[in-house]
Length: 276
Image (cartoon, rainbow, N blue to C red; front, side, top):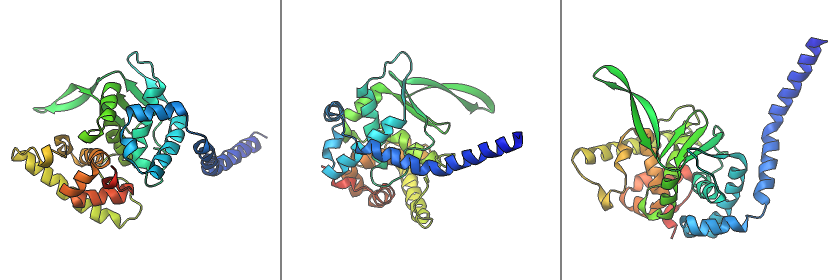
């Protein structure tokens, strides 16, 4: 009897797991079909001016993505921060930009967003002269493979208010989430087709090496430093930094780095250079 009961439970679990994608799609479709709250519209107009630059159809798609995102991804206040709808909507708008052009799920590994009032301190092991030590660093954002994104609200708010500066901590960390879906980040997120990797690898490596070369020569970069120096840290950071510029300063990226823009446009399936 016990064996039969265990077998029945196992069958029920398998059936639930197999049926989950269809159930999840139906649930998400119902959420996306709901009217976008007027209060959220006001928050977007006031806090995320980048949205107004987008074509009407993309604005509509972004709002639908945001509704599902906010229904599934809790934003948890840390360091005494009380989370408001203004915070949740602002984060969701920018977190959904990388999902705008192509269906990728809703960051399937992400369980929650931890939001701090300002920069938060983390400890990281570093090797100094062969000695392993803990180094404390203050960060504005971080993406973990364990299902969490950490953000500093003051940086989120500032970046959302100034879309022309090419700096966006939310886009940066959620680009990492796309990269980390395979369990680690290396600057090569999963592609739609295996053949896409060859072009991606060639272009991204060339641009990464060029940035490092310019910095080694003491150059600040074209157009006042379009690509932030932090992108020279490693290929994963280069992808995240490039993604910030792609969504905020697409036309300039297309002008100064056409090959890089073309790769990001193909990956994200959005023509951000046309956003006005």
